[in-house]
Image (cartoon, rainbow, N blue to C red; front, side, top):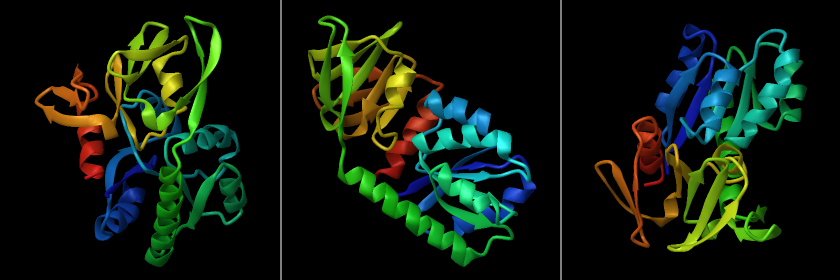
Length: 234
């Protein structure tokens, strides 16, 4: 399995060493470089980008940035990079699996990747359940994440399909619901649809066909991230 890496670096030239390290190591690939944490949070929240590992370069005085950096771990395994050893303690407090001190040694980079792989493997072994409030009955229901086949957005509501014609209707935005689900298994393919990749039968042109026969259209804005995710899990 190829792990996708998102780089958050304000300076393109400063990211060159990390990009070279990623290119040299088998099993990982750069998915995109973004200039700041806030742009990354917006794109990750909308599932315009799906990634496994997030590298974020910290500024010299990142105090005001830490709350935003902390949110990144919801979308991937976080690795922080900085030139001040004092930043390491705070990096671990925002759920980073490692802190890389610049100038970055390749051996330290490799150790960070091994840590990230171990965390991702542990997460994928257990797919827990979530509790959501069913809008029709007004009760909290437990949903096995592994059983969710796809999601359909209807304004401020989402249908959570666990069989072809069986679903729970919940009063929650698609974006907020996807934040509860593992990004390594769920992909947004269109503004109104997200799919569990384990239930995909095939992809033909701009249509995804699920194993239950349901056919869903792929939106142009989501095609690139979706196809990269499929290649990564081959």
